[in-house]
Amino acid sequence: MAEFLRRWWGPDADGPGLTRRDRRGCNYEAYVPDHLQGRIFHLEGSVVADIADAERGIAEIDRGAVALGDTEALARLLLRAESVASSRIEGLEIGPRRLLQADAARDRGEPVNDVTAADVLANIDAMAYAVEGAGNRDDVTVDRLLETHRRLLVRTRLSVHAGRIRTIQNWIGGSSYNPCGAAFVPPPPELVEELLADLCRFCNDDALPAVAQAAIAHAQFETIHPFVDGNGRVGRALIHMVLRRRGLAKRVFPPVSLVLATHAEQYVAALTATRYRGKATSNAATRSIEGWIAMFAGACIRAAHDAESFEQRIGNIQRRWHERLGSTRGHSAVHALLTIIPGAPVLTVKSAVELTGRSVVAVNDGIARLVEAGILKQPKAQARNRTFDAREIIDAFVDLERQLASPAANTRVEPSVRHVPRART
Image (cartoon, rainbow, N blue to C red; front, side, top):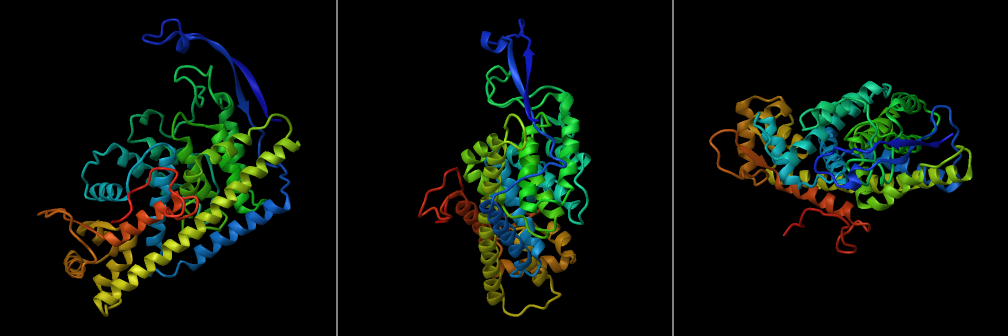
């Protein structure tokens, strides 16, 4: 039975520089959700239909991403888009070109001095790790969640908390110093480990459809809020862990977070509504869970549709490249470069060698040919560590973000509801 535990927060009489409001003590209520393992979920017909539509859309884009010679390239770019959106929900704003350039600098072994870019790149690394182990129906484990979190925070100012379950009470909203005016107080720290273990057992049970399971798992994770920081980003990585473990999204990452970021208020409201009080079988509990699953399924449907249009756009770009170049040998460095560029639209000779498996000489010759054809551009004249951009891919990436930021999927029809990169001029 879900319940609120009444607790006391002691006043801080000696807090230097704190206001009386921040130093005060108070009674507060920490929420303890029901366990998930073995719980029976009753879903009405319309919600079941939404789930079926979402799963069909995700499965179709996963099977049908054939425009690219190497669909992993698209997967990498969609992973980057998904990670950027997940970070954006947390307030980390960064444009595609700036992020891609920081990623290229990191590949060259240079320090990334852009703090926001470094945080988002850490989110990409964490999400990539999270889904890697879920590809062969491997279990979702507490250890995997902890390692995902460690990778997210290990290079930040909060590195001391990286990969560690919290041992203190946290809260959302209100003061930074006490939970007296908090909008939500998660479970007390002594209950977190068992709640996480129960969540993982639920994630490894195939009784529910995959989309419903991912929705419920994400909501429960955000309710448990097991970490000092980074809960939202790890919780959204968990969505992809579940979808990949169930075999629904084996190759691509439907950009669900981009859709949720567009509907941030409804997203938070639907998550909040799942925190019912009382029995899991009550009408209030059933309605709140159904409402959240329906919203999540709608986000998956939209994500799959826009991912498909993006994949087609990338395929059209690649076809134009081949037409511009004429015939290329299947095993040539040029052909290999055209295959990997969609997933790495900002690259160096070094990164291109690693991604294609071709020699430095072959890659240099291939890049020179692509620069001559206008497919790659060199933004700066550099004697060493030269960087090359595929502007058409970056522009397509910007278009995807703009498309997903509009509730109508078109900023000309309905403006974006959050900050997005500028349209191309």
